[in-house]
Amino acid sequence: MLSSMTGFGRGNHRSSAGMVTVELRSLNHRSLEVVCHLPLALQPWEDRARDLIRRQFHRGRITCTATYQCARADAGAQLKIPVARRYYTQLRHLQRTLRLEGAVTLTHLLALPRVLTTEELPQATILWPVFQRALTAALQQLAQMRRREGRTLARELQRRAATIARTRTTIATRAPAVVQQYQERLQRRLADLVPAGAVDAQRLATEVATFAANADITEELTRLASHLASFQQALRRDGEQGRTLDFMLQEMGREVNTLGSKANDYPIAERVIVIKGELDKLREQVQNIE
Image 1 (spheres, rainbow, N blue to C red):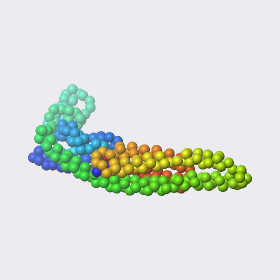
Image 2: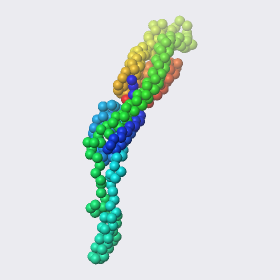
Image 3: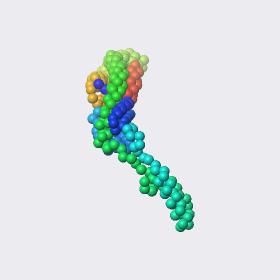
Image 4: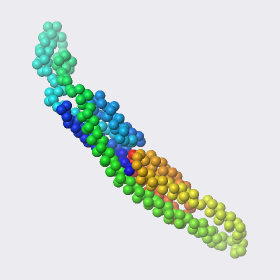
């Protein structure tokens, strides 16, 4: 089953140590890139979080944002106003005594000991199980969304591939008539320019044969059919298929370009344009596939 590279997942878990909430956002990327935005209490577990994400996904730019709410209301940074007030009084006294210029600022006070303190948070070893469960829930939700979007993309890709297959069949049906029509046009022109009976049949046959060889698109049609079959098979396979699909589209594009330059026929040229339009749309959509 194909997976998209775009999606969102959210998970949270609560314990006696507090609550962790994790949000995962995934965007298109040529490889896998994991970006983490974690609070200080969870940063010791960033490498483990990255490993969990890498086990689940292979492509995409995934941003992991986590928040932590400590169970203790008094945990975290605290400002000791009485201590700051005493420091301020003493500094002002020192300033007057030494006749110093300037003012006592907040920056000066915060740099002094015990003005801003940090109460002890739960140990990191206690927080990892909470973080892990929240992250696992977010990963599951993200994977489900990516698979759901992948199914939608696969249906659209199959539909456009089927359009290319039908158009290719129309071209293959038309191709044999191109040489016949060229021969008929050449004979009519010669009849208008050369007296009756003066046309060299051997020369005419050689000219038609040369045109037929140059306009032969049998190999291009065969390879295009082969690439289409491989493309449709890849759409039904599991795992990382985005790069494979993109490569097949490049190969199909080469065959169609050659086909268009060799066909020398307006109805075929029209259908080549249709195929190129479908290939462009397929390329855009394949960029979303993992």
